[in-house]
Amino acid sequence: MIIEHALLRVKAGEEGAFEAAMLKARSLIAVSPGFHGIEVRRAVDTVGLYLLMVERAEVARHRDGFRK
Image 1: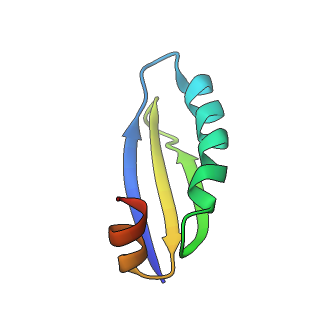
Image 2: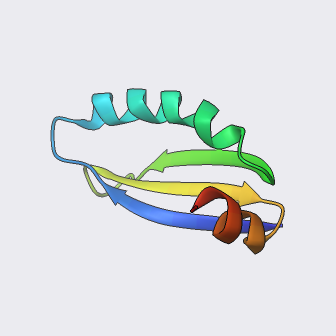
């Protein structure tokens, strides 16, 4: 299993809209082959910074499936 990660910066005041959009995006990401789980965490010390983590069966599922 692999965990892909990304730091996402959101404009001040747009956090609520971002979080709502991520809730909708979860279902789209979840149907991709090899998907195991997703987490989005808000940074405690930086406003507008989020950590996205997506668990997949293997790197090929991300590289050859989700990205294409």
